[in-house]
Image (cartoon, rainbow over all chains, first blue to last red; front, side):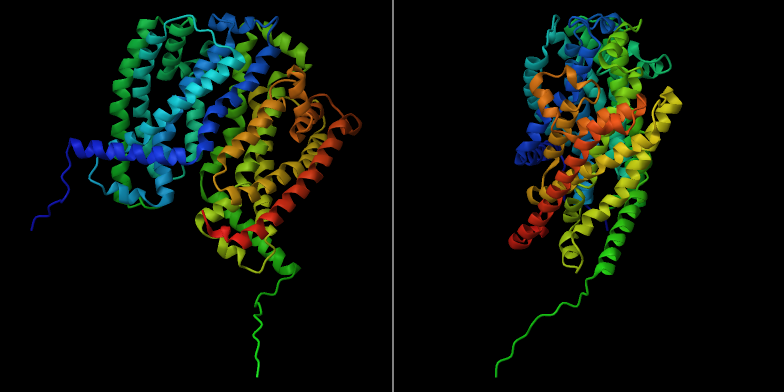
Length: 283
Length: 289
């Protein structure tokens, strides 16, 4: 006797599942409006100590030490731009790995896994709403922070946006691999916190990587995000870039393809192992 | 003939049973803490990487020739900018961890569905919170020792002051930091989704208490707010104890407000717990989530 599945997966059903996941997350997000407020305020709170610390390093409002590394003494525009990009980087990290952890805790991961929907699609679906809400909250955050601390872009906004796209798509690859690790390790908070904090920090979200100690510079240069942040700043703030802009954009495009392939490979390998172990329903 | 049935509890509460309940909570929390290997990461990596972000930004602000650093030292009076930042960020992390651990202890029980059944046991209910606090203080002490060792060994941060004075400052801070945690834990049971409140409280500490800068750089109104926050005195006192060889006399202007705030927050913490307990019994909100 042949076992036949009753499901009829097609492009339409996959897209419907994707939209349903996004709609559910949208509903959950706005059910707790304080979370939206905290997403706006949180990055501002984190950069405020840097604003005042920068004053302690400046004379007549000019951070000349910072300018020697980055090519601009406007350290707050530099950091604010890094913070906004970070919001999106975090969304991809958290959006997938942490969503899986939440599903595990709520006890719905195993049943979701039984659906006739591509598992990568389930992961991508979990980031759709968070990317949209991040865009909305980042816009509000930007307006408030720019009013408080000042933001003076002098370059090409559209080129900066186009440069950020391959970086974000490549991050999905990171996110897939990371989601796999979460499936295996189960306790995700510390893992997500530490790794995203390290990657963000070493890729120079708050400072030019040229200022890192010499033994950390190779680590920073090995992270594709470093070139993404650097290139976006190069376009928008006309800072000194590590490599010529064309080379950095080329690297980001290569990174995008490599990471998407590698991340999904890692995810499927781990997912298979977790299914073999039968630990999908445990937390 | 009239009969009346007076329900009689089988529980025999007393000091001994309360103590046993407290120790059982301590033991359980310690077991949960050590069961997930990620605590090793939390203990060894967080003390290093959180301050590192500010330290590396400070390095960038210093410039390749260190000209910015000279201005910072002149402004703050600090000789070691790494030590200066590490003390501020460690105090912030302490308060942050207490808010998540102690502040969410009852809420986590509620999410697991065990709070209501625990509540029915004939024990002193405040011991649930105190039981969480014991292992938390031990793990926090380990955290601070690891911070000192890591920055001492890797970055050459050296104490010029007395370890005893640093410990004294920390002891004086325990009532205010944990009192705030108790009050928070009780409120979380009522408002449920309270992540935003943690972000708010730790954000206030981050902005106003001078974790990476002297509060004299803040505008006047912000300095007035800072004076009402115990963490401001803790950071200032810890820096003085660690790097300026300050004794009790020099630390008194920080110690006295810390102890006063501590008394205030312990009273608030306990009163909020009692209020929450009564309210929860009346509304039946303990089992809801």
